[in-house]
Structures are given as C-alpha cells and as structure tokens.
Length: 209
Image (tube, rainbow, N blue to C red):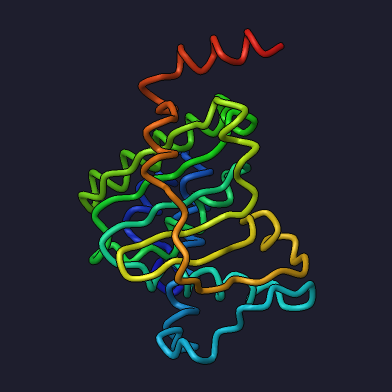
C-alpha cells in the first residue's frame, strides 16, 4: 500500500522516527527514480543540454544525464557549491559505478549548514554504497580568483557546467562535454577538508573579517 505512494522502507523508517526532512528527501528520490524509469532516461540523445526558464524538469534531466554518465569517480569543482549540488548527486549518481566523490568549493560557501549536510551525505554514501566522499575548501585568494568556471570530472568524461542553483532557477546556460581538464589534483592538495579541517577553516574566516 505504501509503495503506491512512493514510500519505500527507508522513508517509512524516517517517518516513524519523526524525521520529516529525511522522509521528504527519500520520497523525492523514489519519485524521481520512477519518473526516470517511465521516460527512459537511458536514451541520452533525447536529453537537452541547454538550460532554459520554461523547462525546469528537463533542466534537471540534463544534469542527471551528466552525473549518471560518470564512471569510477566524480570530481566536482564549484566555487559556490550549494546544498542543491548534494541533492543532485544523491538523486542521480550511478552508485554501482562510482567509488569516489570529491567536491571542491570556496570558503565563501563553507558554513556550518553545508558541513552538517555533507557529513550526512558522506555517511550515507559510504554506509549504503561504499562510496568515499570528501569536500574540500579553497582558502587561498589567489587560487579562488584563478577559477571561474565549474566542472564535473570523471574517468571517462568531463563537463563544463552551470551551478546547481542556476539549474534550479532555470537561468539560460549550458552543460557542455569538453576534452579539456582543469588541474583538479593541484587545487585539491591546496585546499582544506570541511570536516577534518573545520577548526582551521574557522580560523581563516576569523582572520579574513
């Protein structure tokens, strides 16, 4: 009976424990999986790459396509990475193919809310799918100012992308496959882990005000 309302076992456990936010997120994931199944998202040639204001659902499909096509790992570079990025990842990452997720953002977006949500994301991805997830923060102004675009990088592909917030708002933009690859490893090594290095990040924030 609950299945007809797209309430799976995990969502049912959340509602039993009065965890409304997790229940809503899990039920949303279940609905999205069903929609993707019905429209046959595997037919990738039918997915748009132009983000437009009048196609909010197709905008998300375009991003799902990019994320689902990734193999082995996902490296996401976005100076203004937000909670919406975590939502897109949990909804569309192919958990049978991905072993590692690394997210790189700037200190401008590294607040306690993002840290808390990422900890939940990290634990769920590892405990349920054995996917190791990390989020690091760029703190050096020279590094931050040298990066303008956003990328999703994987073993087999690389995409130049808009921010998840732009996709959510439906502002005109594009998701483009590219053969160019930014120096992600170099940027990663020069950044601080949002969980393990939180005290260090707070010190940087205090010194910058």
